[in-house]
Image (cartoon, rainbow, N blue to C red; front, side):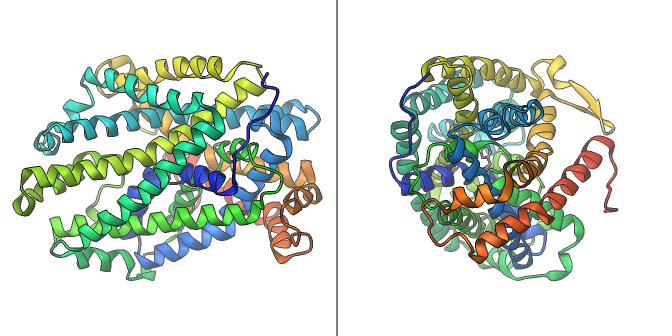
Amino acid sequence: MSKTKEHFSSRIGFILAAAGSAVGIGNLVGFPVNAAKNGGGAFLLVYALFIFIICLPIMIAEMAVGRKTGKQPVGAYKNLSNNNKLWGAAGFIGVLTPFMIAVFYMVITVWLFGYLALTVTGNLDYLASEQGFSEFINSPYLFAVMAIVASMIHFILVAGVKDGIEKAAKVLMPALFIMLILMVIFVLTLDNAMAGVKFFIIPDFNKITPSVINSALSQAFFSLSLGMGILITYGSYINRDTNITNSAKLVAITDTAVAFTAGLMILPAVFSFDPTLNPDDLSASSVSLIFTFLPKIFLALQVSLGYFGASAVAAFFFLLVFFAAITSLVSIIEVPVSYLITEKCQTRKKALSTLLMTAGVLTIFATLSFGMVSFFTEFLDYADKTNSFFDVIYDIFYDTILPLNGFLLCIFVTYRWKKHNLSKELSIGNEGYMGSWVEKYVNFSLSTFIPVIVLGIFLNTVAQKFFGFSLLGF
Ligand code: PHE
């Protein structure tokens, strides 16, 4: 076991790493599309409220549990519950979830890198063609790309917390912010860009229905990387003089700001491509938007920029999303890595190879499930359709289980570990915390309405996803 526990070297290093985890495909594509379809500015308002009223206390609690115990979810839950078996099991779900999400996220990150490589080598027209995406996802070259992406992850994670995760975040995150701003400036100069901006920010409160509220909350939860064990694990690497509540606030603000700014990039681009577009027709899935719709938009730029210029803009965009994906992927793989190091006494190197190997095999299965092998393509039937191996992982771990993990965390922190212990931990590095309204709010919300709401979302998602009906009647 590693004797000296690693830590982030500075508060800003920690904030960038946590923001690196939070800022991902969800911010860059998922949020803008959701907002445009569901009421624009009104959705943004509801979303921002959820971030601060519901998600922030959970984020703070995750970080506190991590720092208190110095462990990932399994160790943390065991540690604070006197080795209670049931809580240990809850912690185990907290490590299994990120492991499985890593598999699914790896597939997408590999695609992103493949798109980047193809665009740089002059194949944007192919990616924008009708058969482009479906051929691409069944190409044997993907396995070579997978090896490259896995080596990058290995390179970052093997260097450890300070020299790997933190350093990568310190380079990639500022680069991402700059690229995003440049891209927004460019997109806003396109014809009809303002139509997209209008759609994005003009509020339409009539569109805020119960199902929109449900999706805003799920989006907020997932965007902050909650329920994935990440913030517990990253929390275990923060110094005792760090002010957790303020750091969490900064991470939430950064994440929301990036999501908002991304809206100013995606929607004007979409509208300048097709000014008559009805946002309701935009595909719900970020995946199909990135991989099938956006290449067409980029290719259309060749009229004014030439093929080379259009490819350069596309490459710039894919690089931006790739950076966001890599920092998220690193954070999610760090959870099981940390588990193997602290619980199974493996060295970081050994833990990484064990993981990249096991997750790698599952990633190969998931990659084969888009048509290459029918066993994986037609893996399981539920909710009246046949689902691929990739779909099953996505549905269970990405779309469903996160609120359950959030629920368990709330109950654990407030009723098992107890509120006064949480307050004690949070007052370290934050002298005025005890007795403040923030303390009162965190303790009250985490023990009352937050667990009720996240449990409700969990149950409703299970009903909708797997049994094809809605508990809330929408
Ligand atoms: N928060 C990320 C996003 O918004 C999601 C994510 C983080 C997914 C970490 C996997 C791992 O896209």
